[in-house]
Amino acid sequence: MSFVLEPFYPHTPAFFEVVSVYQRVWGGNTEPMAASIEFFLRQTTFPQWRGFLARDEFGVVQGFAFGSVVDAGQWWHDRLLGLVNLSQTWCLVELGVLKAARRQGIAQALHDALLKTVISPKIALSTQVNNTAALEFYRKNGYQTLLDSVDFTPGLVPYTILGKELTRASTHGQQTSSAHGQRTRAGGFIVRYNPNPEVLLMQRHKPNRGTYFVIPGGSTEANETLEQSAIRELLEETSLEFSLKQKLYQSYNPNSQRVAHYFLAEYISGEAKLSFDAPELLEKQTATNLYVPTWVKLESLGTLPLLPSVIRQRLEYDLRDPPVQALQLEEYD
Image 1 (cartoon, rainbow, N blue to C red):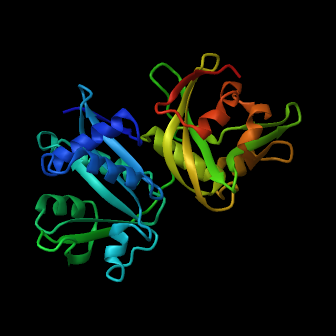
Image 2: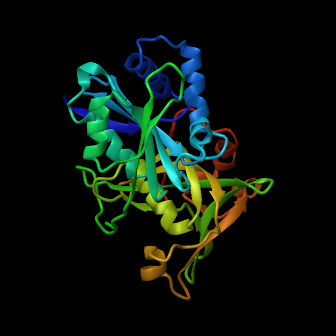
Image 3: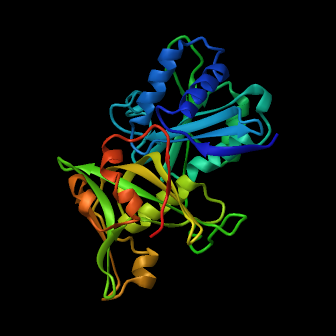
């Protein structure tokens, strides 16, 4: 079976497709659809939530996976408090594949796509003690037992808690392009409330252009999804902790043949600055060529010298009321 992966976001058609698959994977619709939707929506509010789905060659969703940082107030965190150390841990909450599509590499692909987006140094999950296929899969992927058995619900099958530490390998510089020679870029907008909403942009200055602003982002790298590229670029250029929420824009520049994908992200913590290994800091920044991460109030966006201009014209509105589906734009500057 051939399949493709793509991220999914709350309140989109793909989101509800995934909820339907979730019901079929776990018990054949025994839980009311409304309850499953509520469960999924609640999960998307947790820090660093990420979700991916897998579609077959006919466009039908066959599997999904999602998770978030383990945080106080979450049921899983509070139930395991004092039993296992979950500090700085990202939780793989659900990974499910329809029975007919199993053993086709879908679960592995979903798992790997999620882990490439995880910022936390550790990952953990739970699976039933009698789910031998799942235990074999996770242990093959390097997970170790953190807790042999815990009864989440009295009278039902207990769960094993598994976890592992994550390592990161830099692959910067391996850029990708489309089959037609188009260059691909990914980036986004980190928004915070301080208490009024502000968005982080990159302030630039060149002697021949003066001061202007651009959107944090850069070229995609080999074997990355667009979401993974956006997360990596935002980390390099801002050093912030954030949660990617949804894709806002896909733009095409016919002059440069560049396709750009811009995502919306929610600020969590940190001071805005170039990371120590950001190419802008190591290779391009000079006294006359500056890259400065800068917080900008939303009400200032309409008159800000922001490029591309097609996004400047509508950015304040879209950040305050994000569209359900990503908007298709064309840019010329």
